[in-house]
Image (cartoon, rainbow, N blue to C red; front, top):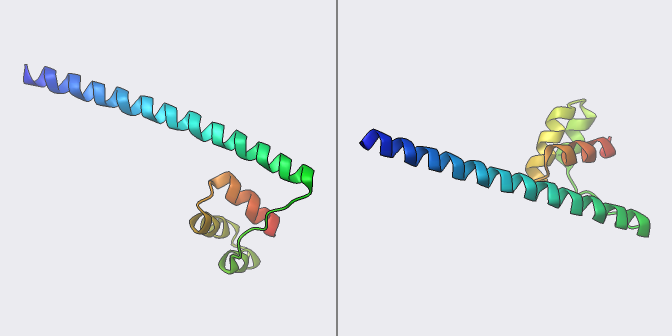
Length: 92
């Protein structure tokens, strides 16, 4: 009986985590859409947000270490992989 109870509890916990992960994924996609729209508005208005001053990223990029530069950019700004890659490519 105890094993069945533990199994049921484990199943419920896994289902809860799966639902939470699904909601987080939807939230991430919604935030990405809003950020994209904001970027379009800024471009339309001719406003450009400068990337933060990141000398370590620039140095890594100059040394041909693009992957390390992207990683350093992500750590410094909290950007996701796509955002960091695009930002580093703009810097190069």
